[in-house]
Image (cartoon, rainbow, N blue to C red; front, top):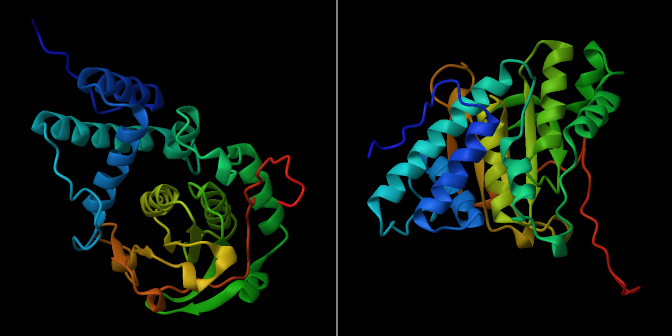
Amino acid sequence: MKKKTTTIEGANLATLHTEIDRYCRRFGIDHVWTFEKLLDMMIHFFEWDTQSPQLRESFRNPEAEAELFTLMRIFFSALHTELAHRKWVDLFGDYFMEYGANKKDRGQCFTPDSVCDVMARLSLSRKKGTDFDTMRHYVPGFGRKVVVNDCACGSGRLLLAAGSNYRHITHKNDVYLVASDIDDRCCKQSAINILVHGFYGEVACMDTLMGESSFSHGWIINQGLYPIPCGLPTLTYSTDKSKFFQYQRNIIGNPPFEESNNASK
């Protein structure tokens, strides 16, 4: 029997979903586990070193690991296809919500793409030229950048909308996106999303309401592309909170809301 092959070049979002479904059925693995391992593989693919603990657990089935790498290639092909006619795209967020990987007790319900764009345009459309100077700050390792922060970032889609609309208005790529979230999986989504869209930034896994004391780890994004934007996109993992800028101003966000019958919450 001839083995089914996948055409990776020109893959789209439907192709990605179909292939993930096929992978789960073939190896008897659920969608959430596959999604998390796919995130881990992408994180390691772009890391400068191997400090982060993700993917240390080896696959018992080498074929499953090889097929997961194929899924990663399909993802990047689908991303390339989508970005040909869109300013930004969040392939992770929709999949994360569709298959119930989100945690309702944490109020995880990602903002629709269209709402993200409206929020970004309302925040940035009235600023022209020197108006952006009030948003500029010196970021160690990146120089002076227009800083935008989302302290409950989810998959990072609000930051993608803000960064993309800023580039559209100014024709510059000097924005620095600051993201944080309590969920490690969301942090990974944001890190990869910021990276593949060519932005500078950072993602910190922490509870913003608890402050710096809750920081556990994070990634510095595309530092290797500054000051000359050429070469490979990079992620730098660190557990040292002093390496993270985390400027808590110029915030764009949609905080998580939890439904509860308990009036004290």
